[in-house]
Image 1 (tube, rainbow, N blue to C red):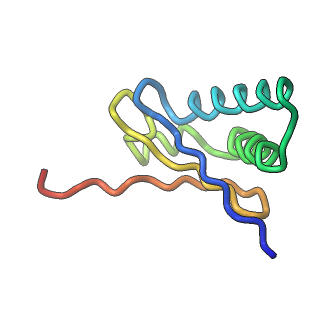
Image 2: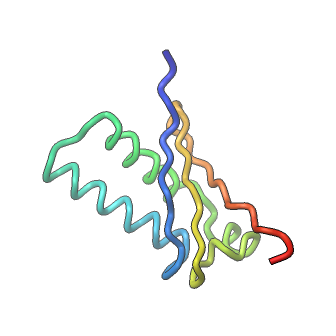
Length: 96
């Protein structure tokens, strides 16, 4: 049975994607040290770490304005069963 994807919501209202991923990574590591690691928490930590090490944040922010933060924006960090992270962006509503 394949391991399900992990979805981590990124709140970009007050800061950019890079800062949000760093904050979430640090929180998850702290939680793991305090409460112990579960399989899911370990996968989240690894996915966040891989995103920090491999994403070109400058390019992401320039190509997708919402990833620069500062507005009521969010995105989803998906981590697949191989530990590979990718970003899903919400679709903007048309005509409003």
